[in-house]
Length: 120
Length: 110
Image (cartoon, rainbow over all chains, first blue to last red; front, side):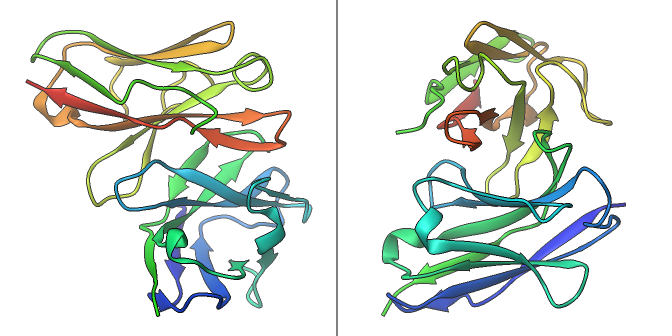
């Protein structure tokens, strides 16, 4: 059974760097085809894809946010970390991580999400 | 402004069939398969349809997906009150080299 759980600060100040961790179980990111993605959702708004890391360490980023995002494997083999620099109040959102299979396959299992507020 | 265009709202009465559209372009829907997600308030999205028209385990077959050219549709037959939720389409975009989501459609069961 695949599960994912996001963790990180609930409040960050403008211009700070946000670091979120996705802890997962039920699969290995070393297995061919596996991937973990990050998607966010501002209050009352639509889903927005942010980044994706693949089993072979290939990475993809949203073009509009690429300069601010870094996705990496965590210190534990079952973790993925997303860093977003220069946070702004418009980045206030619920951030989800999700399992992805097959490169362009669906995000089939999602974490519960973690809410981040950007405020001074 | 989302790359994929969905109607902001849809509605129907119990038992009816409702269709939600998702319009894209040749670089996304025209080339890749479409996935649909269902989201209830305050909860994470759930995969509803993948690869245009496939059901994940546990999803009722009264939810169905289709694709033609650069557009896709989600149909919900035998509408039930518990289907009231937000629905999102998503697809890989070759030009952007990443995933794109639709703006979402809020389904109301009257």
